[in-house]
Amino acid sequence: MECTFNLEKMAGLLQREDKDELLKWIGGRRKFQLLFKISRDGCSNVTFHSKCDNKGMTVIVLYNSSDTVYGGFTSQNWTSAGGAYVPDSKAFLFQLKYNGKWSPKQFLIKPDKYTYAIHCHSSYGPYFGGGNDLATFNGPVTPSNGIYALNGGCNLNHTYDMKGTDFNSFANGNLQVKELEVYQVDECDLNDPLDVPWRKTQEWTTRLMQELKEGLEIYKPLEQLKIRQTKIMLIGQIGAGKSSFFNTVNSIFRGYVTSQACSGTAEHSLTTQFRAYQVRNGPSGKPLNFRLCDSRGLEDDQGIEPQEMCYILDGHVPEKYVFNPSVPLSPETIGFNKAPKLKDQIHCVAFVLDASTVDVLSEKMLEKMRKLQAPMNQRGIPQVVLLTKIDKVCEPLQHDVGLTYYVPAIQEHVDRVAAMIGVPRSHVIPIKNYESERELDTNVNILTLLAMQQILHFADDFLYNFLDDLDPED
Ligand SMILES: Nc1nc2c(ncn2[C@@H]2O[C@H](COP(=O)(O)OP(=O)(O)O)[C@@H](O)[C@H]2O)c(=O)[nH]1
Ligand SMILES: [Mg+2]
Image (tube, rainbow, N blue to C red):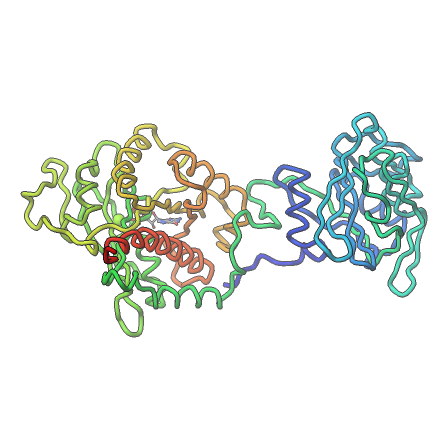
């Protein structure tokens, strides 16, 4: 499935960076909806009021033929009153572009003039300020050669503080515009996709997926270190989705949904095997140059002790070792690697956390995580959090994972987890694993591949430090 985040709502001329800038000024979590557009709807007071009255917050944007973009914002309703000023201390005028150049400026309402914020009149289009600071049009205006010579006026600096910007530097000294748009600025539901993603990525296409996949296929840890595979440790509670994450990565390279690592099986046993899974590249069957190590470690009462964690991180723990809480791992354990090399060590740790349990994570669990983080921090091992099951906390993601970076609900979870665990927000990566699907999905693949790309970058950063050890002394 291609990314279905459609551009329909973006039919207006406002660009993503324009919206970003406006949102910085307006504040809050909001989206823009185009209500009125003179080139589409005609430039008339009647249409303006029929489309824009009583819609709450709106932003009015004018585009002139010199490619200057400017306008006004009000948090109050437009109405068809018979000529009434509406107070609004949040209203402002703004400029986004001047003569085609990005030049964002906000002009706040003067505190003693806020009662003149906007002027609502059934015969008028949008009017701002008692000056009239920015009055667009009165009655209908017909275009000539695509230009609307608006019949309002611009008597700046009466109600809005222009900080020295005059009519010339605001709007090229005229009200001849190619376009005027009115956007409703809606409060977002947490599950409502935003217009602007909260984390930026390239556009999600099959091509991006292919590129990311190829990136992993040719990935190699730093050549000079002579390590064949980067080792990534997955650590998390039973049921967090560790096995499923491996299976998801594996499925992408197999070309179909597989479940090599047992997932979803109730692991009643208190013991868990230490596995360092290979991902094989479908057709050739060649292993990729990273391994995902799966083990338990975050149970409230059971799980890995900090000392055992040190052994794992340093590469002492043999493959398929079975952790047994009653017999802790020690140098006497059969298979204990007494002289591990860099290739045996863990190069990046991914805490795997079920997003739907974030609310109920116990303080005890967090304490446990912090204890395990200590040896990682001592060694400078990078840490990420894979926040799984995002489809369970946000309904729209069940249908389209392509919305992940657009839904505020996920951003909220990411922020919360980052604060709880003490990692930068960018280190918390939302994940949707394959669980009941039968078919691969482009967007699930992209989300997973982006995560792997980031993890391997971090692992490389870590490995880079060891280059110094190799450099001959001068
Ligand atoms: N809805 C949903 N279920 C998931 C996801 N990841 C894992 N699961 C399910 O969660 C359960 C536990 O997953 P598993 O990978 O075995 O967790 P592990 O104990 O950490 O290895 C299984 O039933 C999975 O199908 C996900 O992203 N979304
Ligand atoms: Mg498992």
